[in-house]
Structure formats: C-alpha cells, structure tokens
Length: 143
Image (cartoon, rainbow, N blue to C red; front, side):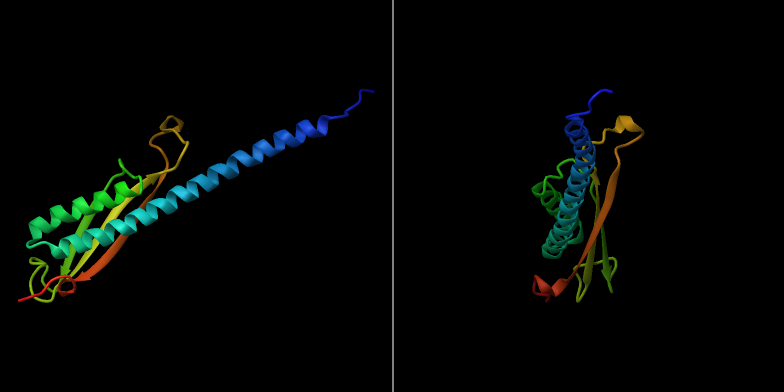
C-alpha cells in the first residue's frame, strides 16, 4: 500500500486556490460596481448644478454633459456610456424660468472585471443610474 504522506498539503493548496480566485473576483466586482455608483451619483449632482448655473437650456445641456463626463472620468470610467435626461417642473419647456425645479437623471454602465466578451455576447455588467434635483433659485438669483 502506497503512503499518502504529504498529499494533504497539495490538496489544501488546490482547494485554497479554487476558493480564493472566485472570492477575489467577487470582491473586485463589488468594488467596481461601488466605484461606478459613486461616479454616477457625483455625475448627476455635477450635471444638475451645471445645468442650473447656465444662462439658457441649450447651454445648460452642453454644460451638464461636460460636467457629468468629467465626474465619470474622475472615478476612472473613461469609456463608460453616458445618458443624461433633464426634466423641469412646473415649466417643462423653459427650465430657467421662475421657480423651476430641475431634475437630472444620469445613466451609465460598469463592466465586470476579468470577463472578456469572448465568453458570449457583450461583457457582463451593471446598469447604474442616479438623479439629482435642483431648485433653480438655489444657485442663481431669479429676477
């Protein structure tokens, strides 16, 4: 009968590797999603402030997109998709009139790390969105 002396060390090493790799991937994925959530939240806040400070709706839209893109870039989401939706109440066609309340919704996506798209279709990821509401008088004086 052959001795199995020392095989527990080999078995324990393989078991540790098999359990450690998925655990590291789960942690990296959770951190990536959390980073994306912070980025989208900061982008919504920056876009809302930029829109409210602009002199008109057209300029506000351009400034909001630039501010949101900068906030995403600051968190390392350089190539992430970006979608911005702006709505205003009670004046939906003129956000800078009277006592409007501007709501900015920013949507983006974070791809999970270490999963190539070769595994089937596009890379798996999480869709993220955040909204920020700004009363127009909060950052500027209304005549």
